[in-house]
Image (cartoon, rainbow, N blue to C red; front, top):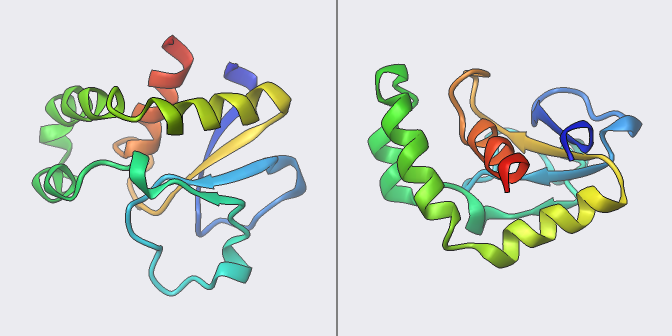
Length: 117
């Protein structure tokens, strides 16, 4: 599944080779229209809970604990995880996220989680 599961910031220009573009943020990205984002599926249910998102606040010092807590939350969403896996079996999937930090965001944790299972 590794080659079929890519990550991309939703603000980057969409490309044909992105495949299925799935937004994995709970909130719609600021200043971005649906037309410009070219999102095929918005799985806000799979995003970190509001409480976890606010607690984390994109603080790299909390990254290790955030990853652990978010993985626990992901286990509560088997249907959404299966939706992503199903699309990945058919071709490339790009998980879209809005965070500026490309090394500490929920899409990275989700990608790792999907690739392990």
